Amino acid sequence: MKALQCVELAGPEKLIFGEVDDLVPGPGEVLVHVKAASVNFPDVLMIQGLYQFQPPMPFIPGAECSGVIAEVGDGVTACKAGDHVFVMAGHGCFAEQLVVEESRVNLVPNEMDFPVAAALAMTYGTSLYALKQRAQIQPGETLLVLGAAGGVGLAAVELGKAMGARVIAAASSEEKIQTCLEHGADEAFIYPSGNLDRDQQKELSNKIKELTGGLGANVVYDPVGGSFSEPVLRAMAWEGRFLVIGFAAGDIPKPPLNLALLKGCQIVGVFWGAWTMMFPDENQKNFQELFDLYASGKINPEIADRFSLENAGQAIAHLKNRKARGKVIIDV
Ligand SMILES: NC(=O)c1ccc[n+]([C@@H]2O[C@H](COP(=O)([O-])OP(=O)(O)OC[C@H]3O[C@@H](n4cnc5c(N)ncnc54)[C@H](OP(=O)(O)O)[C@@H]3O)[C@@H](O)[C@H]2O)c1
Image 1 (cartoon, rainbow, N blue to C red):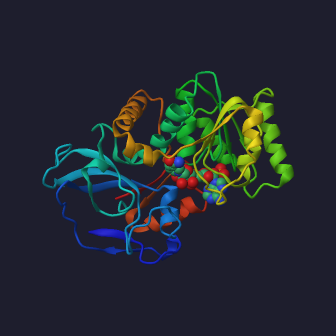
Image 2 (image 1 turned 60 degrees about the vertical axis):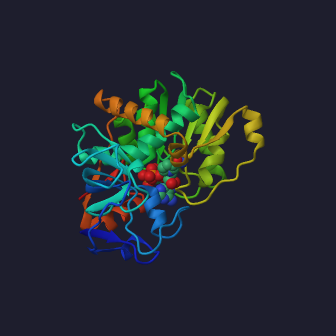
Image 3 (image 1 turned 180 degrees about the vertical axis):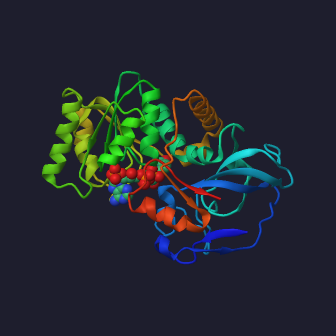
């Protein structure tokens, strides 16, 4: 089969595309013929050796894909050959074939096309869990989303709207905020793309206060981190929830904890992957809710860019270089 391989921990330009051995499922495993895969930020980190879980070298990158079950190993009961699925594999998806444990495979409705199925699980799964289970967001509350045109960010914009929130999107370019408005954001503004200095941080806090009538945001969704988190925390509403999603800007912020005291707010950690392992049944209910929201037109993943499997390295570079809007898809 054809696959993209990581043979040294480095940037996307060092990935190698070529032939590798075909795969055979063992007991409890399934063989998936991959139809579409999508790029997520952890792919960028993993090929550089910067992610919390590292597969042994060499490995095939790609955390997430959709496809058709080609064969099941002994003891598999949850799915059968011919089923349409999406897969949260961790790695191995940027290839024609994938073998995973049956627990990593989820059936998808046959009417959902493969690129959409590949775009849905990680970003919408994370954002639904964050807004519903972690923030318990309520209709009428204000949701501020940073990095709002990115994968998890745009999912949070759409889901926030679907849950009745007033959504303020923040991103680094005009094109990106336009995408957020097209996906339902009530308001959107541009922030600087580099590290924020003191004045820029103050400006960001003031902007949020201005857009919330001085009250601050009830819920903040932060996949960016770096110099952005503290000024946003300074613009929380009383009893607000600040969702710690990720650190795409690179640095892990260390905001003074007196801000949580002064705002009477919560700083809430979100680790969707761990939750799916601990509460698989709850996660299945969330997936079903996502399928229903998609069928009713309330969510619609943005697929702005598509690449061939041969060019999957360029797809990872596209995300790494901050050019992506919504999801980057690899057609296999
Ligand atoms: N907690 C969880 O369970 C969970 C699950 C999935 C993902 N995540 C994390 O969420 C974050 C976003 O993931 P994603 O897949 O949505 O990535 P993505 O599509 O690349 O979105 C990240 C956004 O961050 C912003 N950003 C700011 N500084 C950046 C920089 N220096 N480099 C790259 N982007 C930068 C960009 O928006 P602007 O250009 O508009 O600033 C970009 O759109 C990652 O840290 C990822 O690990 C967490």
